[in-house]
Image (tube, rainbow, N blue to C red; front, side):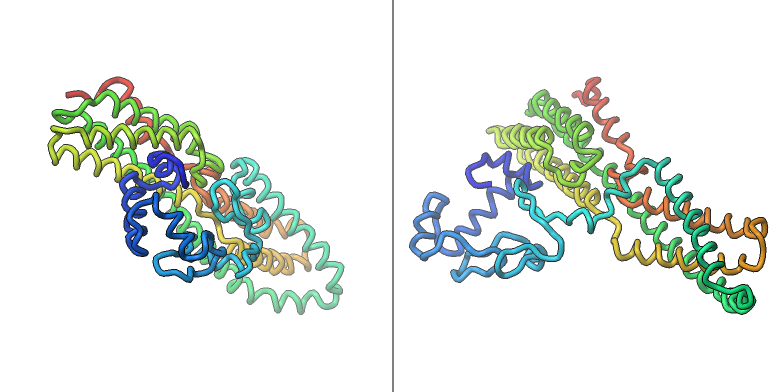
Length: 363
């Protein structure tokens, strides 16, 4: 971010311009640096201009700017650990494809349903063939005696775990919809603040309309929904920041009006950061693996109960297997809002865009 305009740096870091201006000033004050122009000489005088990644600075007032959580993912030698890799453009740490569930949760709903049903039924058919080959006919009665009491325990465990997981994911989806509603409300608040006495509403509302349109077009689905690296949206947000803050700093504008403009703008950028954080959430791989193992154990145990009978008597087990496959498909569909089959509705944002376009926000 060194050398970039403050508005552009604030947009790419998901911060307000005020934050970008305030934090460097406090950081320069710690080692006794009066301004940014004196920083190179101060660093040279202390004997070092760069710090190793993930290490604490030897000099007071200088710290590694990487978040503490990221330091835990890098070795002392700066090498990447545990299957994580860095993004050269943004500096973020991204999990390798083997450790991410996004490739699965982003599949279309029809693919998830058909795939879940097919996988569960094929696994049940393969398990039955394997069990008939492994368990002799003389021992199938004994296997039935062992498997029958386990159905209640395995079925209850899978049902409780899946119900808790689906309820949790549905709660995350409702929370994401609440974030979008708050973002739309704060955008409307900024549009109304722009028509306050002494404020020129056209530049602010035009910049706000451009930012909301860029958000819906480029930052609502796919990888951009979580990364927040779309250039069009970043530039639109930087333009909005510059226009609003320039208007708030205009001489003769009342303190209350200026404060309302800045507060509504900061609330809008905070909502964007919350949305990006919610969109970056993924299903834990280990948790999904435990659910899949529990489903497989339940299917195998149910298949053991059909060994003494024919295929027709196993139809109820086929219904149980279908329910298991559909439950897993539903879990994957709910897993990642903005990047899965069930996405967050952008209607609240679209309503504000329509109001701005039709001139609803007027004095």
